Amino acid sequence: MAFSGMLFPQLQLLGLIILAATAASQPNSNCMQNCGSLNIPYPFGTREGCYLEESFLIICNDTHFNPPMPFLGYGNLQVLNISLDGELRVSTFVARDCYNKSGLNFSNSYSSLTSPNFPISHERNMFTAIGCDTLALIGNIDGKNYTTGCLSLCDNIESVDTGYCSGIGCCQTSIPKGVTDFIVVFLSFDNHSKVLEFNPCDIGFVVEENAYNFSSLDLTNFKNDTVPVVLDWAVGNETCLDAQRNSVSYACKAENSTCYESNNSPGYRCNCSSGFQGNPYLLHGCYDINECENSNPCDKECHNIPGSFYCNCPKGYEGDGLKNGTGCRAKVSQSNLIIITLCISVGLLVLLVGGSWIYWGLKKRKLIKLKEKFFQQNGGLLLQQKLSSHSGSMETARIYSAEELENATNNYDEKRVLGQGGYGTVYRGILPNDKVIAIKKSKIGSQSQVEQFVNEITVLTQIIHRNVVKLLELLTGRMALSFNMPESDRNLAKYFVSAIKDDRLLQILEDNIVNEGNIKLLKEVANIAKRCLNVRGEDRPSMKEVAMELDGLVIMEKHPWGNANVYTEETEYLLSAPTQSFNIDVDTNFSTSTTTGYDSMTNQVLRPLDGGR
Ligand SMILES: *[C@@H]1O[C@H](CO)[C@@H](O)[C@H](O)[C@H]1NC(C)=O
Ligand SMILES: *[C@@H]1O[C@H](CO)[C@@H](O)[C@H](O)[C@H]1NC(C)=O
Ligand SMILES: *[C@@H]1O[C@H](CO)[C@@H](O)[C@H](O)[C@H]1NC(C)=O
Ligand SMILES: *[C@@H]1O[C@H](CO)[C@@H](O)[C@H](O)[C@H]1NC(C)=O
Ligand SMILES: *[C@@H]1O[C@H](CO)[C@@H](O)[C@H](O)[C@H]1NC(C)=O
Ligand SMILES: *[C@@H]1O[C@H](CO)[C@@H](O)[C@H](O)[C@H]1NC(C)=O
Ligand SMILES: *[C@@H]1O[C@H](CO)[C@@H](O)[C@H](O)[C@H]1NC(C)=O
Ligand SMILES: *[C@@H]1O[C@H](CO)[C@@H](O)[C@H](O)[C@H]1NC(C)=O
Ligand SMILES: *[C@@H]1O[C@H](CO)[C@@H](O)[C@H](O)[C@H]1NC(C)=O
Ligand SMILES: *[C@@H]1O[C@H](CO)[C@@H](O)[C@H](O)[C@H]1NC(C)=O
Ligand SMILES: *[C@@H]1O[C@H](CO)[C@@H](O)[C@H](O)[C@H]1NC(C)=O
Ligand SMILES: *[C@@H]1O[C@H](CO)[C@@H](O)[C@H](O)[C@H]1NC(C)=O
Image 1 (cartoon, helix red, strand yellow):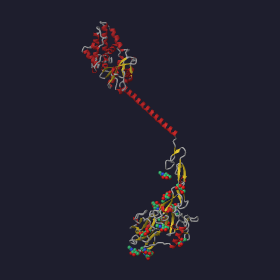
Image 2 (cartoon, helix red, strand yellow):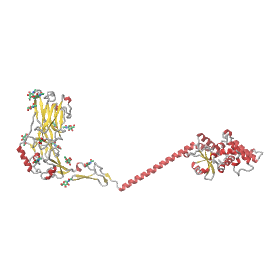
Image 3 (spheres, protein in one colour):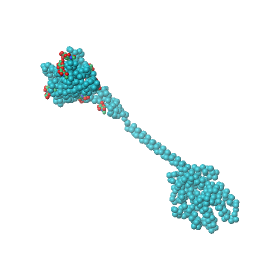
Image 4 (cartoon, protein in one colour):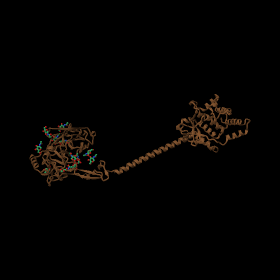
């Protein structure tokens, strides 16, 4: 183990203090700015009149070194770098103890440092030891106040982590705050006898953090004799507040400079105010930072002002102008805003109108399609085909639209109801040409019924016989109008049949029809009609039979002895040109649940002529 310290002659130290006290607080123009590669900023100086106080003396030794080498005047430490942030980088020796096979040390070096004015930075340095049989200790030179250290033991080089100081082969510990001197000593357990092959030496040093990275090769051969250490420097032993009371000795001479306390020793430091840079210890040392030239933080126009800057946006632009802010954006003028708003509004309106137009168009098309579908479903197409195939004799047959029928029945007014069949309701309708018609609004309709209906209608358009028509007119689809029948008894056919059964025929016929002479004829006709109302088709007479019987009645009334000619003429008439029109209700609007059909009456009375019943 070895202890070593370096002491300056007391007389020389005293002289420096006296000189510093009388020296001007600013360096003169002859001061050296450099020593070798080192830049020496004030408050440091190489001679009297150039430093702030004696602790800042840098001795530039140009007699024994070329290039000249700077040393800290108090401590004989080689200066590597001086920073105005309050850091001073110096070079210190590495401590080492090496052993040979006889277990004796054959070479060693000490590491010690004494820097009473500038404490060793506890934040920027680490005490580091390298070895595999090594207990390294660091403490005050006088052995008091503090001792710390670290232990590193290992058996072989393979177990050593390389690249960083992990505790195997290399160990580290921080140093306490405010330490102004240290010495490194080692303890070895086996004089390195067991690890001599790859680790003959104990190595220890205080080093600037991150300036040294451990490598396992350093166990065998650590090459460096010196390592950098960071010292914290500060002015005086006062706080900022105390120092500012004496403006003559106050070190922060520069305008736009600030004072801050040292955190590792008594004393204070100076800094240029924000927005300024330079040397705050010199009278005009802080100068403005031209932010516009340095970093140009502005998006467009940059204006530098003392200690700061501002950004401008060109005319027609707005925003804070900062690159890291909102920058400059093209301004939206009032008139532009109005135009944009207007455009958006108009656009929206057009969109709305167009949209709804298309919507309604599609809906209407759908409706038309639906109507067509229902028209087809309800036999409209079939009817049209049948009617057109008989176009020669169909000049008066017509298909009416739902709207026309609605108009004709005053929107299916209850007052217009003539009768109620099992399949629907019959209304009295008035066409625009004042023609009175009967309109049947069907309730249900199956596909088979539709076909039957279409056939009926087709035939109906052909069977135009004045007697049939007369009879139908007589029965109506007036009785209905003149009698106020109960709702349940609206079925005309039933009513008619029951009237005949009860011998009440004359009661249901209008007075002006009945007279003394035609009662018998009316009864005959009514009997024919009753037969036509039979439920079973086979029980009903064919149209031909009906026509023949009616003709027979007519002939009998006119000529009780008979006339064959009339019969022929009537039959022919029945089978040819029609003189009456039939109004066929083909309602295609499904939503109103009205489909075209036919009631039981027409079903039985109006049947195809050829064997139809
Ligand atoms: C320069 O360094 C040498 C060796 O350390 C020393 O002997 C000499 O006195 C120094 N010169 C000055 C001017 O400090
Ligand atoms: C000293 O440190 C400053 C910044 O801290 C750096 O710019 C400069 O290069 C360093 N000089 C030397 C010689 O290390
Ligand atoms: C190592 O050798 C030096 C002399 O070269 C001696 O002063 C020192 O005490 C020795 N150290 C040990 C640990 O033997
Ligand atoms: C070890 O070192 C000591 C002291 O330097 C020396 O006397 C001795 O001969 C050395 N032994 C060997 C084996 O090198
Ligand atoms: C060491 O301790 C003594 C007494 O406790 C104290 O006066 C002195 O300032 C201390 N030195 C350091 C460097 O801390
Ligand atoms: C280490 O070396 C010293 C001096 O050379 C000796 O006194 C001591 O016994 C040795 N220790 C071991 C464990 O070899
Ligand atoms: C040490 O390692 C760190 C991180 O890997 C790196 O940043 C640093 O420069 C290295 N230092 C040296 C002296 O190699
Ligand atoms: C050790 O020495 C080498 C070469 O001189 C140098 O590049 C390196 O930075 C030094 N390492 C330390 C930790 O000082
Ligand atoms: C502060 O420093 C001055 C001289 O620079 C000295 O006279 C004084 O005793 C110091 N005060 C303390 C508390 O160290
Ligand atoms: C810089 O210092 C001058 C003179 O003391 C002063 O007028 C100015 O306001 C300061 N500027 C800033 C940004 O502190
Ligand atoms: C000194 O001022 C500069 C610029 O204003 C700033 O970046 C730096 O952090 C300050 N230093 C300290 C230690 O306050
Ligand atoms: C933007 O930049 C300015 C000037 O460089 C700086 O003061 C400010 O903190 C930055 N803001 C953000 C959010 O980065």
